[in-house]
Image 1 (cartoon, rainbow, N blue to C red):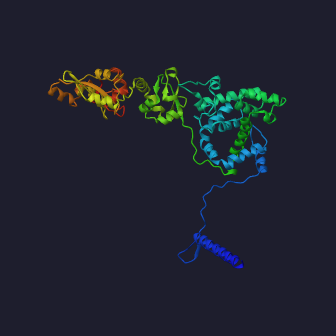
Image 2: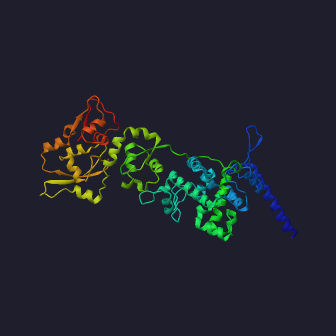
Image 3: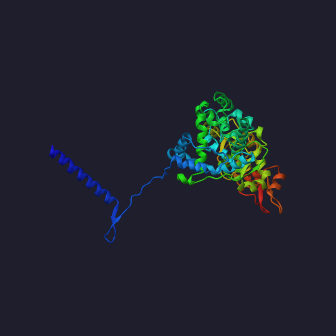
Length: 464
């Protein structure tokens, strides 16, 4: 028995010596001079400061806030949750904060409310303007459709203002101020925002007429009992980020914009294409617009445009607006349609039906000339409302098979006289030329493969 114990002891010592030697060898190296240098291990972890209930209570006591509150175990537990266990959520909030809080603060001041109310949006949506709850609440302030409409927001299949940060924030301020007037206490107003004024009145009755949040706490719905303490925990944390080693690393800021009215129904992607504005920027600035389309019922609505592009669009508003309404849809031909079109006609027929794929630089007038047909015919065959075509678009053309060979050669040449042309005169502009020939500037640009609106005297332009 003694021998067994001795063997175990010796094995343990040897193992300890081996591990110690390995650890030491990993944390040290020999320098060029032969001396042993200690290499400190590289730990990758985030430092989370420790804190006590008393420390947090003292910080809250010294906070300058229009909404005073006292710490309790419920609030403290949420402070621990957000600063220790769910720091990733806080980092997400901090990354989005600067995008909305300046606007929040201005709105709260305009409505004579404590600016701290802005923190409620974090609890509601995590500062995600497009988030939707399983109950159907939408946006930064999580309005239900009926309440949204009650406070002046459009909610229909085409437009949903609940996703608009500015409109929904103003609606939230109005609603919260109405709830404050109803109950005379901001904490109770916040509770009513979450569960509805009816549930709060019921809680007040069951509590024997108490009118504070903690007085009616036990009689409120379970979710609401956590709702207000979370708001207060968030209010404390955002005032003490440094103490909890929470830093704003990659903030996002609001995009500067101007508002323009096109008074038309159109697709945002069409506007983006005409103006070279990023489509995602247009969608982000106009989140109320569903399905990327300004509907006929809201044609007079103002569209937010990135400020960097506003001057160009205002300078060219006439032709851009004209092109928005005349832009042709992209025709998509199925494989079977293209195959049928390219098979040609029977011997008895005098025309052959072909499918032509639009190439870069093509204009509808030149395509018509090459195939011995008129521009009007191509538009009729393809149900086009304008002369606009796009690269890759499939055009169905009924070309005359009885054309003489000499005529065919002439039609397939790039002779500009086969289309209606105009020679630019001194003082001319694309706008003036477009008015003379009942075309939009964009149409002239497409017919002539122009990338800019700059033209010079003597230049020949296709205008039909």
